[in-house]
Length: 129
Image 1 (tube, rainbow, N blue to C red):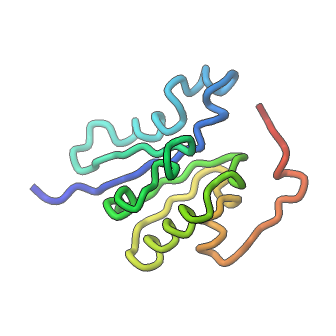
Image 2 (image 1 turned 180 degrees about the horizontal axis):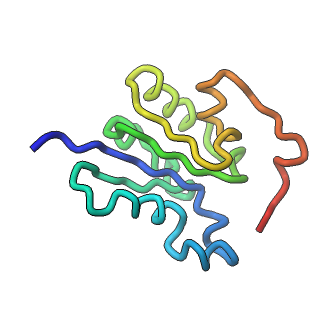
Image 3 (image 1 turned 90 degrees about the horizontal axis):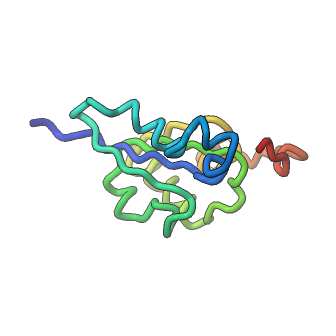
């Protein structure tokens, strides 16, 4: 059997813990994304959320990750700078894929990889839920 593709799904996992988002994603947005891989034996999926130690993205997890799927919305500033740098290292130096979903333009890893630091102005503090 060929080697599996190791996918890690990152989700802030804060807005989806309360209504109205919880009614749409009862198991979290990360679980909904992971569902897309169910039934495919070629993938090994790992879940990482912002409330986990190292946001679930330790060196060991990232070293084993082929593709990181990133979902974030409004808590990008709370993401640890060291972990953001670790992600960038794996993307740039190891070729780990990075799929940026939703408001990931504001995420520290995305901005660092692109060499931009986008200021969203008043949007940074806007809460939709």
